[in-house]
View 1 (cartoon, one colour):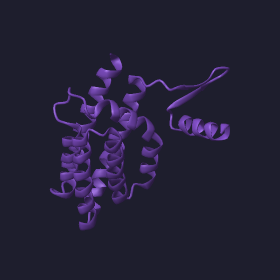
View 2: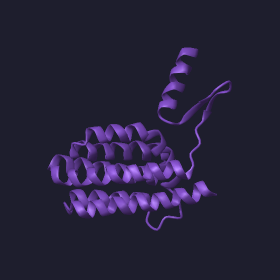
View 3: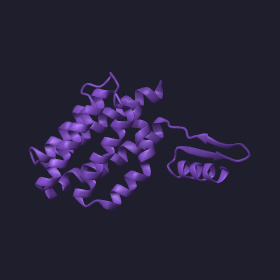
View 4: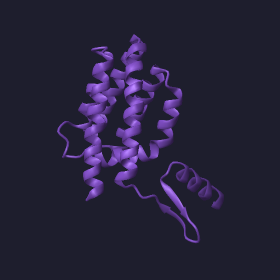
Amino acid sequence: SRSVVREVIRYLEAEGLVEILPNKGPIVSLLNWDIASQIYEIRLLLEQSAVVDCTKNLDEKTAEKLKLLLEDLKAAFAADDINLIIETSTQLYQTIFTTAKHHIAWEVVQRLNGRISRLRAMTMKSTKREISGYQRIKNMCEAIYLHKDPEKAKQAVAEHIAEAAAVAKNILDA
């Protein structure tokens, strides 16, 4: 029905995925490097802070949950299923932010999630990466639950986001 379509368009507009042009209607939002670079800067700040506090607040149950999610993510990459990759990585990050007690930061991430997912779909499987997206996430998770080293986790986030941003810039500039 039209009311459902209007509601979906409003939701996509709130996610930043659709723009409403006067006298023209909805169009897919432009994703350029300026927008992407700001998203990566926000992710860097929020994720580094979250992994540090997640490491400090980590208990055995959460460590086990991160390990299981990482295994699920590996399987999603092996299956070459981008939807499952995005869904599983979202669950993994939600676990990190929740354990860190960064609930408001997670709300900000969720607000950006449509755009983040769009960037992930572009960059996660790029062959131009030195290290795979999965391996970068694995390094971050292992720094949290295996090494229990907040600085190592923070560095892993920086490396992951820097490489993803570089890949996105190449794609968006092309």
